[in-house]
Length: 249
Image (cartoon, rainbow, N blue to C red; front, side):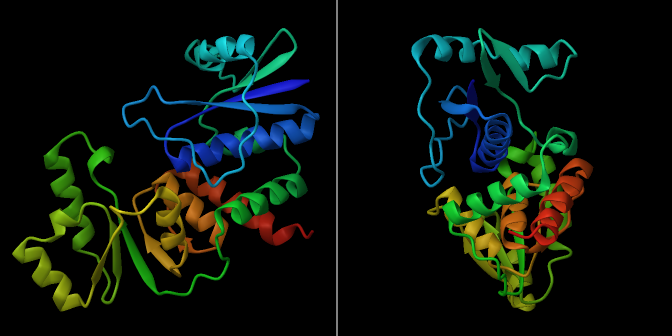
């Protein structure tokens, strides 16, 4: 049997998609193929650090482009996979606990360890407290950005490192004075790859974030502590962390 996964979005989304596809292929004994979709606003490239599977043959590429699992989900069927002519097509976000209930803990652990190795993430966070400030594409308006920034700045702990690619918003005299009083430093990520940002976040003992998938994976792969308001991400993080501790090689 063949399985074709369609990846899209940034590194955080790609990790969910590739993890699910690898679990599915391993569980069902399928040969895995993949193709990356750039037809999104940010046109994020496929991560070069994650091991790639071969591209599917042309007929399978055309069927994958139809986005059949997405269409089924929109029709209320909630299907992550659709079989066509003996090939399974995998297409979704895979950010719910229910997406992973069919997979054995030992297999899940093995695939999580494989992702950690591919991204070269250390499981020994030790660098104090970080604050992940990702602002622009999370909010609908500048007013929402300003309100969120004010709320986050009001609870920055002393000595924290602020990891952000929006350093200009922190360069105003008022904010600069606040950060100086707290002894907080700004770690700019503008010149970093997504993989480098993930490893930077993974190095902290605790990170205060705003539910980004990149922070999710930094936490899962390193064991770093963080809090999630999104209940599905919170529960999924708990399962991924627990299975790494509970199931031994």
